[in-house]
Image (cartoon, rainbow, N blue to C red; front, side, top):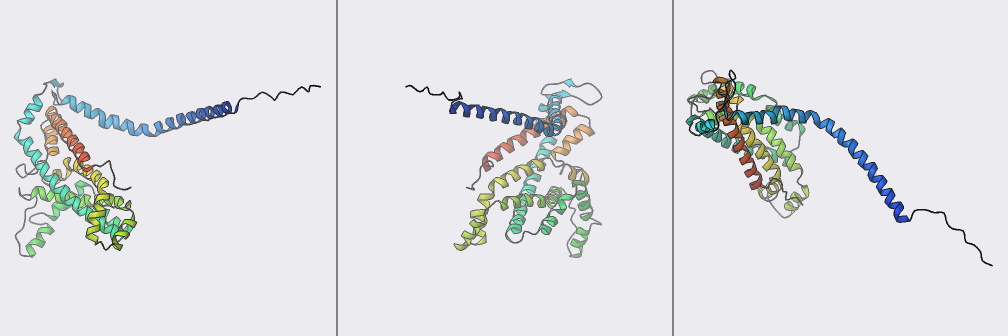
Length: 320
């Protein structure tokens, strides 16, 4: 007698069931990603709007105006490369560029060394939040206020700085009224204001270096100086490179300290490029020529930034 076997209920093969489940989960994740994308767009929109309105559009407008003669009172007149030819033959422009480069070298050199020393001391000796706050205090002051304060301190006749120098038996120094002293003085004023902020950036980079490396070096008998050059500097290089890029860009754009202390004097000794651009645009209403100098500054800063990034290998780290 033959017994008829009952057939099992029809169902998808195991592989097909798993495939269907994966597709279902993929569609769910896709819907979630789209939802997150819209939410991200909402949060990014204000910053993007600000970028387009206050950065991208003025930049494009400035590039266009650099090829025109424009004084706000009449429509812009296309003049081609005339503004750039004038810039190349303008001795005041080259003097302003030279003065700016001098300022950048003094500011970056002193600020970087001082900030690195402060950061290492904070990291190796103490990590007090109070001391970090004290170090950052000058940065909370605006450049204009800092410039005015130091203008009063360094005043040749009434400044407390020169009063101290005179009390010590030395001659008073016209820090901001002498061609030799003016740019170094302005650079040191800005070093005083920004060094704390730069030091805290480097301090944050030092925090990423494992303490095990220092402890192992101490066991091997390495001195603090040797650990600084063999451990701290190589591992801090990416952060230091980014800080240098930021400070160089900021230094080339110095303006407000000069405006409130020397106004470009004496005899153009502090007539930095940004101040000359401002004077050409809003003092002499030569907006086309000022735009051409701004474009030149943009090109110079872009080239310096790319060169710095490549030479310092800012995108690479020696941490394993």
